[in-house]
Length: 400
Image (cartoon, rainbow, N blue to C red; front, top):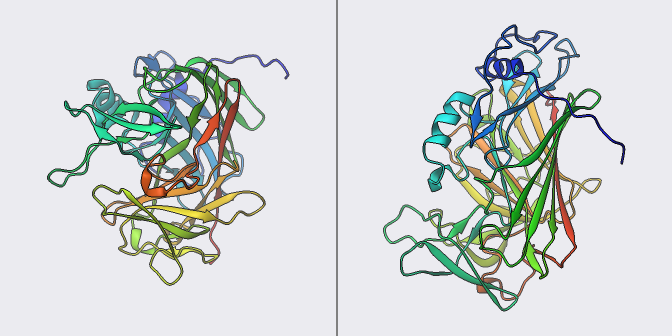
């Protein structure tokens, strides 16, 4: 591997990112993303500096291109925001998220609040499990205990539905409040690349072995790549799954005409949309409102989605989920490049102007008895083994 020289992000870049994330300003962004104010202190979330990857626009507004990516090393390496220049629309926020200052206020005020872990904005990484895990709830209601490979695993009971008596369960992994170390940013051709690590150990005593997690996030004009490698550095095997929870914005604000394409032929049945617990049954999507397999997708209309899609068709080895907003002349392709990505969870309430597309390894409740021994997507890492999750974002202009 070639040695790379680290480059500290100028403090002025953060001020620029705040301007970019405040909304659409012009069709053609300025050639430079530097601000004149270099004295502003770096904003911190979770006790660590916010990192803004950036690049100068090069297409003069003739094609869509990414401009910035805002990352939170103090909060599980979450994406807070991604911006792009969209022809005819200008600087556009790709994710639904508050400003850096607002996010800092929300997260720093009560970092232990389950409602902030992960926050319902931006794009949080989910390790060592995405989605829900059920188990026996402890007497104090603080933990649940499930079983993997004949061994008990006890996890925080950090979520429950809103219905009376809703069952507490574990959700969305164990790194949302973790701080990254060894954070480095380097120029990488047409953009910048961030690398960092979370030395997760046994995830606070909740996991069977010791784990290191390495992150690489690369911003270029034509793509944003996010790669996570989880390494079992302990002495015993461990289950592992990785996912992401990005809230993709619908720039026009008109959800009804936005379209979704998911190359999946089956859907996991759930008990209801409050618990969202899988029943263990997989249902074909053909002939239902959940069929998004058409090459140009299907409109979101007023459909509620909180569903796990599977039996994915790959194009050139990639799981391609596409969101199109015809009214904004905007499209984004979420490409899952890792063969271990077996399901896509999609969350899209009809009253909200976003679509959360979560390309992940596993089905919900992957250790549950309802699956009757089926492979639910969890990877087993023996000591010394690793697994890699890789997702790429690409922009496109919809066909008329």
